[in-house]
Length: 298
Image 1 (cartoon, rainbow, N blue to C red):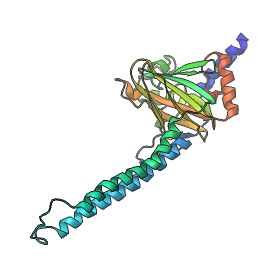
Image 2: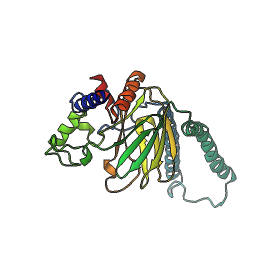
Image 3: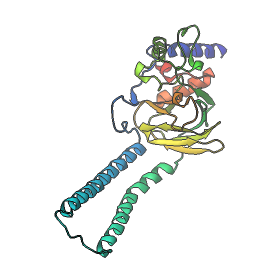
Image 4: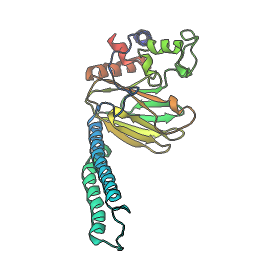
C-alpha cells in the first residue's frame, strides 16, 4: 500500500510539472479588451444574464423617453417659442402618470427578477458539497462527504515556488521565470493572476453546493461564468449552488476587499466528466495529498 501511495504521489508530482498538464479547455476567464459577460455555464448565469439584458432594454427605453421629453420641452417651451409661460401649480393627470408609471415598471421588473432570485437562493440537495474558507490570502477547500481537503494559492505565491525549479522567480511578479512556472503547471501566460496551484474539481451536470465562510476577515467566493457570488463572513456559514453544463476550466477572484494581497486570491474550478471526477476522488484518497485531475489523463 505504501508503495502504491508513493508511486501515485510521484506520478502526480511529475504530471503537475509537465507543460501538458492542463488538458481542459479554458471556458470561463476574462478576456482583455472585451465587454459583456463571460459565456454562461449554468442555468443560474443564463437567467441572470437574461434579466440583465431585459433591464438594459427597460433602462434604455426610459432614458430615451426622458431625453426626448426634455428635448421637446426645450424646443416647444423656450422663451422665444413661448414668451408667456403658463401659470399653474398642479396637473393631476401628469402627477398620476409619473406615480403609477414607475410602480408598473417596478412590478414588471419584479415579476422577472424574483423568480431568478429564488432560483439562485433556494439551495437544492447537493450531489457534491464543498466547504470553502477564505483566508488572507488563499482559499481552503474541504469536500464534506469525502476525506479530501486542500488549500489553494495563486500560482506565483511563495508557497507555490520551488527553490530548485524556480530559482529566479520573484513572488507575485510576472517574469520569464514566473511564466515558465505557469507553463509547467499547464497554464498559459494569459492566465497569470488567475491560475492556482490546486483547483476545485467537480463533475459536469452535478449539483454542487458550496458552504462559504471566512477564517479571518470578509472575503467573497465568485465564479462569473457560473453566476455565483457569496461573501465569506467569519463566524457565519453561507451557501451557494451551481450545476456546470460544460467541461472546462473556470476562473474567479475574491470579490471583497480583504487586505493588501486581495488581488492575489484567485479561484480555479475544473469541471470534468463523472468518470474523471470519480478517478480524481480515488487518486486523492489513495495518495493522501492533492492530485491534479490533469495528472490522471496523461
